[in-house]
Length: 263
Ligand code: HEM
Image 1 (cartoon, rainbow, N blue to C red):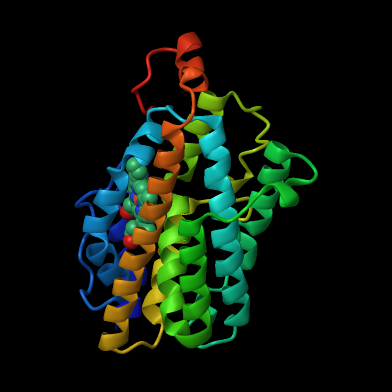
Image 2: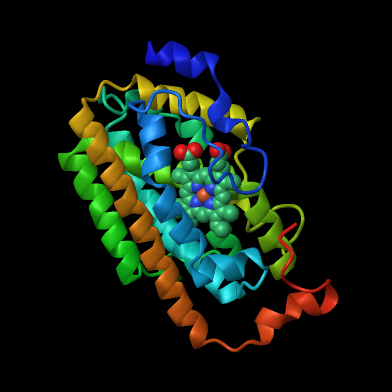
């Protein structure tokens, strides 16, 4: 019953093309995992949106060095996540969400890192403490509690599909990256034509998973944890940002208009 409702009623993404969809989620069935996740991460999503790092990024106040370090953290995070996804691709509690061609970001991040750090990028990057904790948690979940892996995939991929295009434009302008997309592969989902349609498919697949109520609640809890891990990485980047000179930071707006408009 839930599945039919979800498929017939696409209203949960009715405003998906716009800016922030706060409050824009129409309740389908409150026991649908997609609805539980959207409602159950609303608060932590707002918290994440309001971190200094994310706010600065949206304003185009992004230091290239921080952007690179952010990509490094993402590389280690997605490497762990996609390894665990591969491990569980046939597990019934994850298999319907296995979309490697459409979603996987590790290779895109590797190409971006090669662009930023050069051919020997792998010898130049190190995992940060927060990224290490995040990756450790993902690995533990993938091995011991695969039903909770969906929480990690949801938090990253659905978020990437929601904000990607805006962030891509901001990053490209702020750091004057080539419009050809070098350094921005992470934001480019070549296997997905409509992010909105894909998100709807992903939601209906999440709702088809056979999970009891208790497990669904644990998934929501795990997603909150995933948001926390992301915020810890933002916090780390903020700290590094304090040690950097402001020159690069102000370079972009000098040529452009004032910073502060987010498109
Ligand atoms: C969804 C904006 C930061 C994770 C969305 C949506 C927007 C949005 C517009 C679309 C909702 C829809 O299609 O119905 C933003 C903005 C952010 C931000 C403006 C920063 C200022 C983040 C962060 C994360 C995240 C840091 C996690 C790492 C998600 C997830 C969804 C989402 C998981 C899917 C929600 C759902 O439909 O269940 N966000 N976001 N977002 N975002 Fe963000």
